[in-house]
Image (cartoon, rainbow, N blue to C red):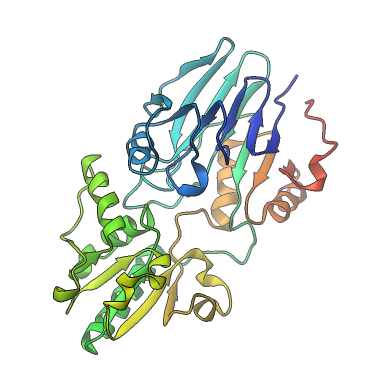
Length: 329
């Protein structure tokens, strides 16, 4: 008997009574990281210490938290052990490895990336029989250029804007992407101001042990000569109107798509992502060496077909090919 993997409100494992990144409140769910699309007001959660601290800033209290250190196996049910491993996505992001007496091992990645980051723990690749993996960039065209090159291009964009007496504005999610940007611009020695939400979360990163180059909370009256890092949605807020002579750039893996600058309505786009690109997705599968793969998010069906073409049983969760799939080995 193997794992029964279902997808409704996130991933549901009925054999152990736990959800994985449930989208709306449930009794018990593993929470892989603290991004808004992966959290809800669950009654009971399993997560890493970093995620637990970040959740305090994003959710009201009242839940039962099982906080596990990375790499330490703990009993989850009477016949299942759980171990959390770093996912490399943002600080505290975790993969969930389940070991069941009869079903074998199952690894759920949540969002992850193999490339080394500056503001997240390095991604682990534990072996597992069954793999449930995020496949946001699951097409061959998504191959990210070297991180150092992208960061150098971002720094050049900022210098050119400042030289023209304009304010460079870098759009990145307030949790994860903004801290990666802040770290990545350290060698450029550019003065940086942060949007209030980004500032708040960066301070929590510092509480959790990360060090950053100097930065300031956004102040419109002292803006001259600074780079501004802020969430993408802030372009519609009053905050944005206090910034004259703006030059904007979106920092996203989708920058590889044709017409991305037009779609994001920015002066520039740069392909820096906290997700795995296509080669890293393949490399991750090779390292985990599963016998069965379920793909989730993004180009899940396409990547599952890629894996099947390579001789591996793989299916996209929630797609039609899952409706009558038996999970017997």
